[in-house]
Image 1: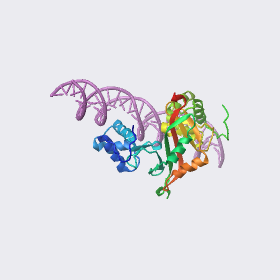
Image 2: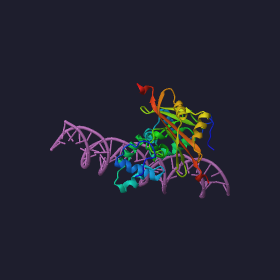
Image 3: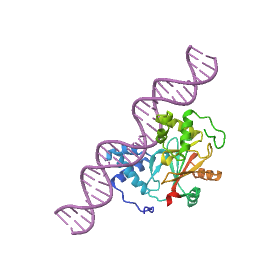
Image 4: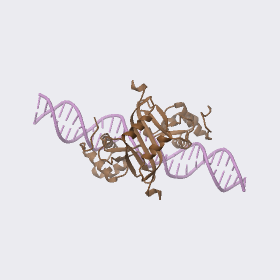
Length: 134
Length: 134
DNA sequence: TCAGTGATGATATAACATAACACCCCTCGT
DNA sequence: ACGAGGGGTGTTATGTTATATCATCACTGA
């Protein structure tokens, strides 16, 4: 049972709050170790602490992981149980979170072969953003 | 040496051949270091050597990378310049390569927001395969 | 021959991630 | 109040993935 509606804020522990607000301030993807550097001042000083909080935040839908970059980013929608794709500028690292319509999701799930029952879909689009094109 | 399934086969260096045939024998995704262990007997003994060959093989379209697993797999089609999605069994690691139709590709590229010009799309579907469902 | 070039070899280290255990503090049942 | 148990956290150590850098080798063409 983890699906949380948009308006319901899950309760966060101190570390989770600290790390989430760090990611929100950044507004761009950060590696776990970059986060660690920034929250040292708040008394968090070891990788497992960061990864624990990140995993919990991901379960709550408040943080997403960018596989292609080994990086984490705060959900642009606060809390969400929806499915998203990500567009990532390969130059500057800017990320746009793309909500997938029901039709999009159905289409993606439909790609799965008969042998495999799909559970989770990862879509990451790499490209160049407007600023970096110049 | 078995012949390529189809298409013109790009010329491969010794290391590239070694690593490609290792991946083909495996028929499942392998980490770079798992590959390293298996090709030590062939005289390849350092990570950069493996990564170099893998990068070249990926450029040639003969090997694909599974982002969600930090793993590599031989292209099921021998050589390809097409776009693929992957379905991965989260239990046993089995992978199915899914060719994307022009329409699929267009649909995925169409998800990209106006600000970002898409260049590369990664689609990975995690689920449970038939055997592991039982 | 010898400079240039591209592939490879080797060392070292960076970057990412988790296992395992210790500790503290709260709460709940008695 | 007490103590057992659990959740969150702190800490050490280590495992895993990836790359920077420079040395060396083999081949080619002037």
